[in-house]
Amino acid sequence: MKKDLIARVMETLQEAGFIVSSRCEARGFDLAARREEITLLAKILHNIDGINEDVARSIKRAAFCLLASPVVIGEKRGTSFLEDDVVYHRYGIPALNAHTLYDYFVEGVSPYVYSATGGLYVNIDGEEMKWARERKELSLGDVAAELGVSRRSVSKYEEGGTSTTIDIALKLEEILDTKLIEILEFLKSEFENHLPRQAQDIPGARVEEVASGLEKDILGVMEEIGFEIFRTAYAPFNAVSLPQSQRVSREESERMKILTGISKYTGRMIKRARIISSLSRVTRTKSVLVVNGNVKRVQVDNTVLIRKEELKKIRDPEEFTCMMEEREKG
Image 1 (cartoon, rainbow, N blue to C red):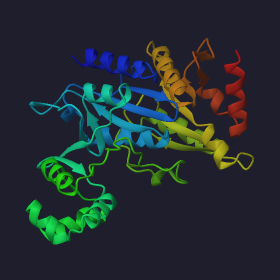
Image 2 (spheres, one colour; image 1 turned 180 degrees about the vertical axis):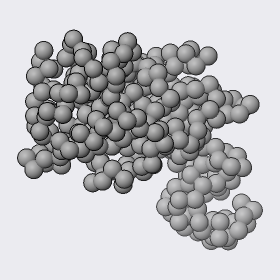
Image 3 (cartoon, one colour; image 1 turned 60 degrees about the vertical axis):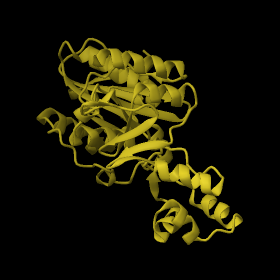
């Protein structure tokens, strides 16, 4: 069931003009997709209640690091099917069904309605409402009487930032004879256009997945070399790394983000390297897999392989990136 839903989501995104990554096969997000400046990290599951707080936090953290928008796509919430063109939320991540996804990205039809405790709600354009009320020469009390709500409620609608039920919003539009219900910008990013100065400043900075001894060792070495490390959990990569150097500006550093994976030499290592490579292509980053053990190749797709012993001999981020560039050229 989940496999079929993932296939439908990938087909929709591709039809909408997105570059779509391979399926991640991790507990966190299932795929990444990019169209122009929109990057999505999508968690796809039949029932959206299947995502827990730790996984949601990890997806938001990865999205923050990669300047992406997290989204959950599913079919049901509890025992009920998700309604078309309605946005739900799970631990702060917008959730919607495949139909809403198709309408939004393929048909260009934006949702207006979101689900919250107590029912379905919409947002009101307070400035337009005040202008329409004054044009009709109605007082706050006049509108409140016709709506059957308090004068304070009407005042709050005009102040903005207050939602209301669909019924009240439609009645309000009828009274004022103007369109007031706002489009729901559900992919509005909560991050700024850059990473914070410190890893602990990232929303959801607490990483629940316990780091292995190998991971702590390798990420510790990368910090000593001069990288700023933003750990991730439940993702195909273990961290997003940024080179910190006096010769590299903050803006240049952010353009050199590296999806950093850590692995023992196993049969699954190559498959994981290919997944990280697919994600780096979508998110416009570089990718590296630091391997504990001997490997016969230096690159898998676009993911550079570096042995742990080689990493310990590197002195600074410039030497690290030079090694990556040499191996990328083959």
